[in-house]
Amino acid sequence: MFEGMHNFLLGQPVLVFFLVLSLGYLIGNIRVFGISLGSVGGVLIAGLLFGNLGYTMYEGMQTMGFALFIFCVGYQAGPQFFDVLMTSGLKYLSLALVIASTGFGLAVMLASALDLEPGMSAGLLGGALTTTPTLAAAQDAVRSGLVDIPAGFTSEQVLTNIGAGYALTYLFGLIGLILTIRLLPGILGIDLPAEAAKLESSNNQDAAQGLSKISTRTYRVTNLEQVTKSVKQMQQEALGEISFAAIRRAGEQIEIDQDTWLELDDEVLVIGNINRLLATTHFVAEETPATAELNLKMETFVVVVNRPGVIGRPLSAIRLSEHLGVLPLKVRRLRTELPLTADLILHRGDVITFYGPAIAIDTLLRHVGYVEQAVDETDLFTFALGIAAGIGLGTLVINIGGIAIGLGMAGGLLVTGLLVGFLRSLYPIFGRVPSAARWVFMEMGLLLFMAGVGVNAGGGIVEVVETSGLKLLGAGIIVTLVPTLVGYYFGCRVLKLNPAEALGGVTGSMTSGAALSVVTDVAKSNAPALGYTGAYAFANVILTVAGTLIMLV
Image 1 (cartoon, rainbow, N blue to C red):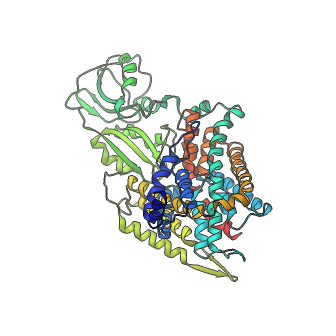
Image 2 (cartoon, rainbow, N blue to C red):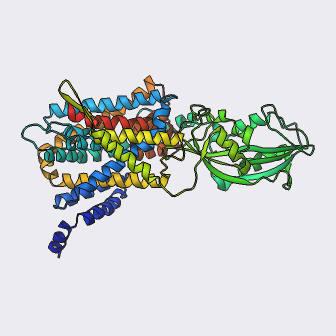
Image 3 (cartoon, rainbow, N blue to C red):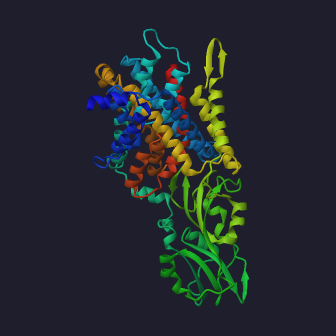
């Protein structure tokens, strides 16, 4: 029975892929001491198992996955990559460069010192730093002919070495990074929750509790002795918790501006966290039934930041409450939720969820950006044309001094992805790929590629383990730990980052979402996401380039 099933699967490469995918997800979700490999690690291991048994996948499936993944990496990073350079991006760029260059140098030196076979240095770099774009770019450099294959080796052998080197070092790269991130604060005597709290305003700890705790209430001011601040000051000190939507005085609704103070018998429509309202308002006002004049229609709406007037400025500078009477609930960047604080610097492409009067939407568009519409359709024309243009760009080669220089498919796709993503942030009707669709394209592309890497490397994994296994594992430990520690030291001592932000920046520089979740868990805050999202956009670009360069060294 087993032999019959084996022979059947040998002739079904598409079926093999989906078996690898399903088994990989199962393996990736297994937790040991709270640590899981995730979908990438699980699919890689499942691919190695199937490949070692002699099964194959269509080569075109891996190439398709590679194209989807790299283009989506660029598309997702596009709005942040160009914009963040003009704000606070240089420090994150330098952090990503330091970690990437440290890992690059160590991988090259260790590969030479240990006499590793061609291609293993690239696998070592990608696996130890847990970065798939490095692996993808290195293999593409071989397939596209950018790399001269050393005498005595074939392209297939070099590709196997890259994949096997990645597979052997990725396991410790992921687990070692997570353990280092988890243990480092304790070893250094750092109270990470306290450090994370410094990044957030003490008044904003519960700012993004969600719509279930947001309410609209109408009050009549009865006690001015407790009113010690202007309306503007009260809103800024309770950002994300209280917003004054409207004030009616002597039968007329007044405009709320910088100098507005509450007066006796004012009727006030307030949007806010129900716990905050119940705990504080009874000192100054009594709740009254909603009146027709102040009974505004409230909505929740999602806005994508793209207005030059707010890019690079703190959330508080938008003066949303003063002009619009809306309440920010949460801010997401690169699919990662950020701490909701008054001094949060906004970047192009940030996604902010607001709650407030429906009449404020048009004004909000003029101040902040465009409303993210609940549209399912993807602009497949631009998406496909962007990929085609990237592949075409990657084929261009310039001869300088007899040396052929080109971007390769990885570089071409990354460039066009960055451009399309950036242009999409400027012109909302251009190149639309809804967030859910982008996640499917990127995840499916990544797993198509990783399944192919695992299956193709599986046939030679045993030989690689026997000849270079211990050397690779030892080198992988060094290439994981040293850049992590160097990056953290550089971030804290040179860039003067908060320890929580520095650790988040390290995980972003190594494109590890799993490690970020550990940092936020230890910090009991999502403040480290500020460092993660800052470094992540740069790291994807830098590490993709590194994958090509290391094959040329």
